[in-house]
Image (cartoon, rainbow, N blue to C red; front, side, top):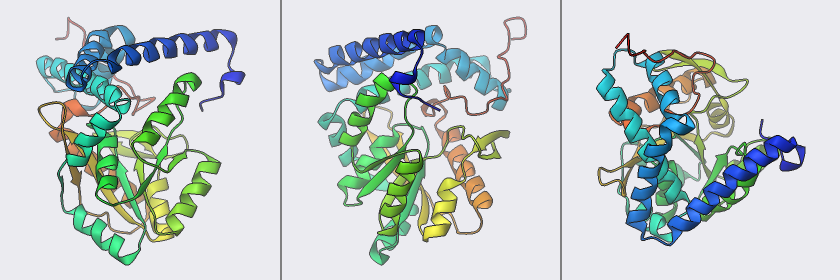
Length: 305
């Protein structure tokens, strides 16, 4: 669990402070460049750094575990696309109005849109579940711009120095924000009880969660979104901010509402829905996450290729 800077050891403080200083400096330099060039440049930079910072190895490990039959050329292509998308997403997070304008102009479609409109008309709360695909904040900002006021549950960053300005940046894309934890949960529940909408990113390893198959392998997954939907009568709708081919614009896709049943069945449906979308956009999902820990397969060696 992330801790405050005051609780860190001296070496950890130094490491986190240095990495935050580097990122802040990099973001500051990029802020003075035109938006289109800024986003593309950050994508290119993360592609270059991916082997150095361990992203490329993590992607290889995850793909070796879940998609062992992928040709090497396709794996390398996904590595490049994932790193590029991560870099672009980071640049967009701090871009402010230029990013918001593109998110606001993004077309919103899919069968889940009617379910969202119906819930709004009935005064029923909505839980929008998403994953680290494309730019998930584009979907939130786009829906807010269309009149769907929305809070969001977020996980505190491990780096406490980075977390401070990270939260400030995502708050700029829409409020209220609820930090994962006891206090944030209380505030979020209060928001739901009033008929509010929240967005939850549901594709991270969750301590205390349930092992549910994702890409055919067990991934520890939180049942909280489904439990909240059942407890407060909320519509549970998958949503995605899918990046278009130009690398700058988005499609906002709402898939069918997940029927109310039991938390485990509904959480499996969340994972299945995300997997279906990821398979259509393999280079846009954050394969850099340790989604399947401790189940890790080693990438093929050169001798095995």
